[in-house]
Length: 602
Image (cartoon, rainbow, N blue to C red; front, side, top):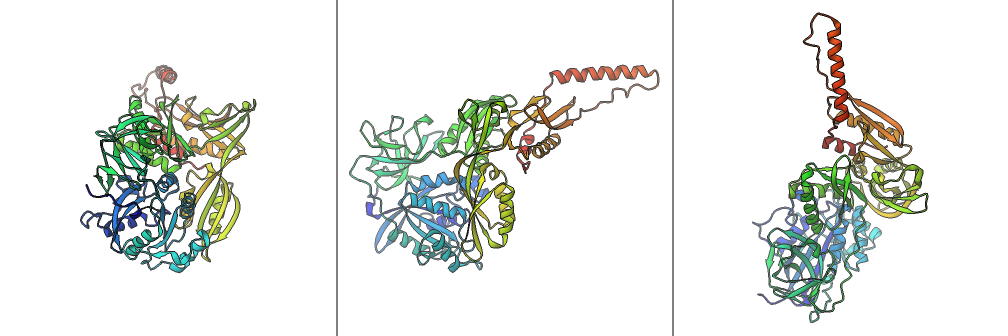
């Protein structure tokens, strides 16, 4: 066991940036330059070890790794936490920042400041972190180094001359960056001689070793065979193994103040570990660490197993995934159309898609997802205020005084040439323009007030299309506002399908209902009887389509003779279809639910 690194020689930092500005590439280069990995071990996005991350080219989970760098003859320990850049994973960023003393802010020298760059910088300032700005991709012919440096000073208030010029791809400026990290970011200030206090910033479940805790040691020391306690649950365990990420799990036998690593305690009960909890010595009075603010879910949908017998398996898969991604939550619910399932809350639409894909891949489950919606606040006639996260839970219209929808501050950064197209898109979505700031002669940031429901479906994709990929966005929840909303019911074969119901603006409900019914008619297969499809508000039908029954020519065997023979066969067939319609059920395939998600509401 090697001697522990002196506390004043430890630096804990995160890499934060807008999506696709080069965080993962920079992390790879740092691992190479510090000889944490060899050239032979190297691969792109080394810390992004999930297939989904590699396929989509994005970081989904924060990753911790320990490196060593020598400066002026002194060996320093650098603990890096690489973070996601998409707005849907901002909770991962906030948890990572709470375990650090500094942050490296990466800005693409070609694209300039993105909306998430601004949001992550403010997040780091809230945690009182030292921020080190760098301009990445300076080797590109399209790099606007001086202009983007002035953007950083104008928008973020960080001096332009402090921004290092780096190319994570070629390695230019990376050695200078590591020296600057050591000079700029302070050492951890915990009490090495005090009692153990460790912050749990992540965890995952291993089928053979139980829950593996990822933690930052704030005070004291933890060693193998120590007895520890989870303060929020009171559960006590013996530490069987502890170590660091280098970048894989490497057993060290002990972790000291300021270090980041993992603990294995043979924890089989997933409920005993909470993200943000404090690990302390068993049986001792210990002041818990402040932990994390609970994330606020903004998008909700139902997840149901295609096979009803997989319900318990889906529950176990959700519990394991929730341990690794505490930013979503789930509660059991029942649907008349889909049976038993779970109502899940997410931080955004991409977050919802990632969770569903992880469930299907990691647990091997076939899942039906209902249309996503946001949380609404409802004022009823008896004066009570309720939060509604599903259209099926909305009270009858005669019991409602008003429905309030979540309203957000939306920041959009776009090239000036696309300003008109972005304005048109936002105004069509009932947005209010609040302010407009020119970051440079070529780039502008517009702040809108807009209902959250208008941006969670396809807004981001349309923004990217209109701005040729250069537009970026970030939003902040403001609260609830009253709006003219109604619940649109979808009836299939006379039976309401609550999974297809939606809360829609009153002035667009007829167009939306018509489009949805037409889409369902093309996706639901024909049955042996006519299947009527209806969109309705209360008892008023807005749109109707009929899926015609499959036909069989029962009179083909009748040739010649009396017409009454054919009539008798047709009447017999009609009676059979009537009986089938009364006892038969309509099969709605999963692709019909997915088709409902793609129907535009405007």
